[in-house]
Length: 479
Image (cartoon, rainbow, N blue to C red; front, side, top):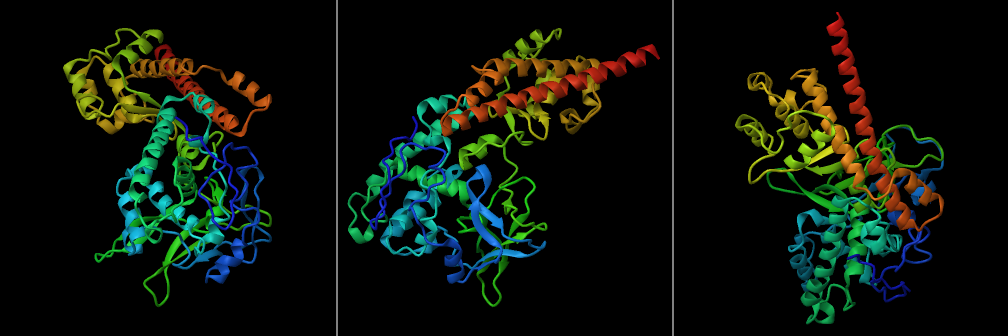
């Protein structure tokens, strides 16, 4: 169920915790208030540093971002935030009843949804009229382009089961957590209420979780007695307006403030930055599932994108038959083959059956090793090779050319079956985009196009490898 029951915000001094109902391409650019305070001036006023060339501007289709108004040399400090400016949340950050309520609520949030923990603090500060962070919060988007805000039809339009599962799981969590929050605050006095007695529902919780997941950075927090630091998510005003690139021109570093135990957080030019260039950070080497779930965008030709499959013997039997591979044994491996599957954690009660295609590996090493072993008949030949070799696509046909080609053909057949699970073809998707669709529909279609492209790229690569091996084999026989 999508969290889509929103009420259009009419934000006044009471600062209600509501979100935009229907997201459009333009609404993703709208701030919480029509004319928010100047964020650069606020950072400087509160003790931060902003390079004189840094400006807030429209960054193409990426929305608002930071650009350089003139050339900036490599190594220059772009933004420096003292310890008081980042928005953080921890058990030690407050002592009043309102903070205690948030701490108790945060303890019930799964670690994978860490953004919701900091999101509680963000909601509290949004509701607080005299919040120190209001100049920052008022500059945040009114809504986000993440799938939890999609209408039900656009969630279906994603056409990819692993992402559908994650979206629905987050939506269910938000609906359940709404009730948990209501129970936690229902009998609190005005002064003890973390949200100023305002109603907190699934939509406002979704807004805050999305604000954090799309903008927060996981950095070093409080230092422990042994010298290590706690991993702490924090929102970094102004720095978080940098858009993403796998080849960034800026990086974030943390330094201890001179004469203080507190940390400075800096954005520094990693390369020379030319006039009118966007200031870009690398959000991480992530697949499009995570980029869409947490950030609300899809990267075309993402080198880290992949598809997720479940390792299943019967499914592989069907694929090998379709590929014309003789004597498949995937659903009934020999005992020695089953031992290899156990070592790969693809067999047994605690087996991890999730495998991937695409990305940097192209073929999940565990899947490739399993296919090589199960398509082999000579146990002694298999045991001559270590597991790393069997898992490596760069290994030169370790169990022979016939075995390698059979493994490739089985994977190609798996790709064909995976493509058939999508209700539409890429040409149909591209035609739909040309007809004009809503912003969320466009994102959903772009996402599924990229997933299908990953599958096709894997098929092309393995077909090329198989042809090359067969060509070598033919030449060897003729020689």
